[in-house]
Length: 145
Image 1 (cartoon, one colour):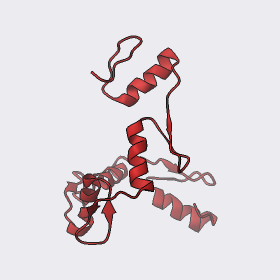
Image 2: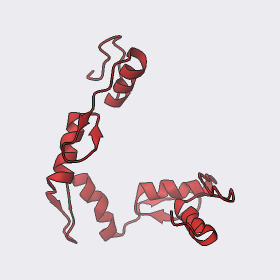
Image 3: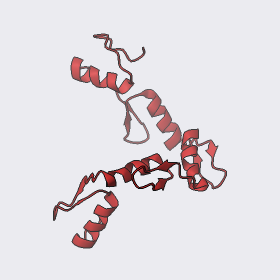
């Protein structure tokens, strides 16, 4: 296994978990890789390389056949294509509303769970969705957030 601790031989399923273990248990300072073009830092050399290619060298070889957008990875293009197909593969089992993306469904499910994580610091009112909180802040308190 690649993600094995060199000190105590504990094994980890993810590189990040091993890095966290090394810092917390053995006091090993975490190694970071700094981008020379901007202030961002990365935990792995691969993440830095991908960032550099995608964000600074603009290596985007996967073009959308429907519009002029290009993407670094094929999976990014696939996620984008749902805009053009309009196929809603993700359905809420509570109200049967359908969504293009899994992330949108996940956010929607917070409504049914009454997960009110956005709170107005002025009046204490809480909101399920960030857009509702922003609208409240703008209309009731004159703040743009």
